Length: 182
Ligand SMILES: NC(=O)c1ccc[n+]([C@@H]2O[C@H](COP(=O)([O-])OP(=O)(O)OC[C@H]3O[C@@H](n4cnc5c(N)ncnc54)[C@H](OP(=O)(O)O)[C@@H]3O)[C@@H](O)[C@H]2O)c1
Image (cartoon, rainbow, N blue to C red; front, top):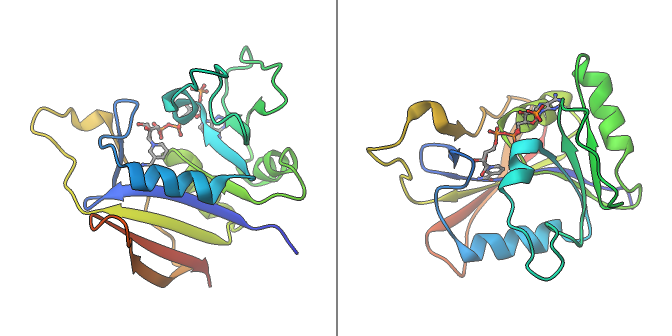
């Protein structure tokens, strides 16, 4: 069986995915779904998304059961944890995204988990097979929010089409839109 390369995200009705370094809502059902979808996979993310993840109180690590590849231009960032790799995709993103993928476990699925530039890079690379977008039926924007701190889900390129749209059976606030490459 060939491994799948996917992108997973959750946004509000306006396409907001983040605010000021975190996700501006808390939804247990979506977190559980994210965990079950991405377990036993390699996760690729930007440095700010990694920073936003909660640390497990027991292990002192983040998403400790999954291999994480964190993109950063900061060459000072190093890890001795085999489950955590810092790397860069500077300059030629097309060839570098292949190098980033090379770092993933060969026999496991890969998920791009954000943030914005990483989603864009992944979708533009043409290597992503599926996009799993959860939409939460709220407007997360608050009057006191600073626009520059809002992170939006990027436009999905025409090279992807919606193949399924399903309501979440456990939480009426959520639905899931699945795209596949044309
Ligand atoms: N709702 C969701 O599904 C979801 C998912 C993920 C994240 N989020 C939210 O989104 C926000 C974070 O996203 P973000 O877009 O601001 O940041 P991000 O993509 O997570 O991280 C940006 C950082 O990644 C590194 N980077 C980006 N492109 C790179 C490249 N080509 N090569 C090497 N390094 C690269 C840089 O790190 P350096 O500065 O270290 O060089 C850059 O500052 C948070 O609020 C988070 O909670 C939401």
